Length: 174
Image: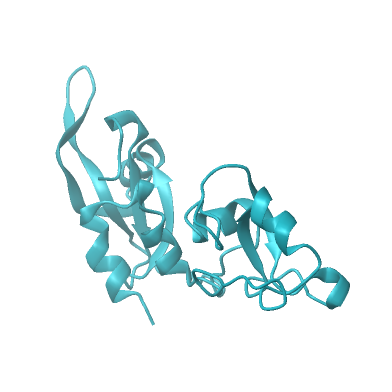
């Protein structure tokens, strides 16, 4: 499911070549359709947008009519995106409370702020690890930290992924 109610629904926007570009609100997607800048690819099953005199199918996936050259899409390295990548779980003990960021290789030992070196950790594990590497602290990581691809990042943050999106996110994976 990609919605809690119809007002909080999200829409996947595809480029003219059907590659995913972004996720948008229903309102913005509808305006793009109304202005003939996009076309409806997938409807949201059973949902309609109603005005006083008309009704329209609610979009789940839309496609731009003209190709837009989008520079290489990267997921921004932010605190929130690291939490999303790690599914809001400590990467040492899988707790979900009191989460912080941890450098796998501590800054004091030359560790950089990068996708491959930052993880989500609970304050207890972060404190236990201290200024050591996980190996030195006798701790192991549940998942190795990696840079997520744009498509996998949209797909894996399933709070907003619709079943209608999956064929387009799978096809766009490289």
